[in-house]
Image: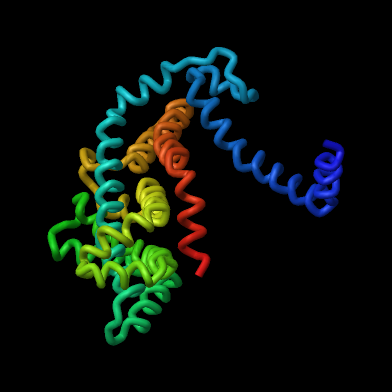
Amino acid sequence: MNAVRSGVVRQLTPGRLVAYAALALYAVVSLYPFAWMVSGALKGRDEILRGGHLVPREPTLDTLVDTWSRLHFFDYLLNSVKVAGLTVLGVLAVYSLASYAFAVLDFPGRRFLFWFFVALLFVPGITVLLPLVILENKLGILGTHLGLVLPFVNGTAPLTVLLLTNAFRSIPRELHDAARVDGAGEARIFWRVYLPLSRPSLITIAVLTAVPTWNEYVLTRVSLNDESRYTLPLALEALASGNVPRYNEIMAGSLILVVPVIVLFLVAQRYFVNGLTGAVKD
């Protein structure tokens, strides 16, 4: 027991203490705005206008209930789920196949195409916004959810290809060769061998795709004019742009927007770290 205690004491070097203190400070600074958001969502209008205290003196769920029902947040929630869900499915379906080809198959120009995808990581998405809007207008999909899903899927290509290709490369080549000896084709090897072994990486990609898609504002604001197709970020903007902003309702809307992301991460966190580590270790 004494040996364990002395080992713990030796590990707490001044450098570690400074690092822990910096991380604790960063956590407080990061969580403080979130705490105010939760606090505001639980306050009535009069109390939040008085301000000055973090803990609600008269906590109430009426603000959340009224914001949810009066502003039809459920409809906007379904729109966000639809766009984010279709984007995740499209990313996993398209780029898992592309990454398998880059990692396993041998074809002319493989290295060039792979590094071309990786190079796209350094292209700011805002630079293609205007050409994208013009193209979608000519295709007749501007202002639709499909006009959001397709650019989101395309924009996720560089990071997804990089992570999944490395994840597939980390799988022993002997498994592929053994499956070929047993008579399996490439499609069956991909479905039965590579996808199951890459589940943590696939879940990581799903989370990394879903979160920014869920929070996307710029392209959504430019594309959508029909209020019935609004996603949650646009609904929150409409809530904040009134003549007399109701700050407690804005906080309640923000909480409704962020809770699904937190739940998603909590559910997938045990896969997330393993998947990210496996995807970047090579």
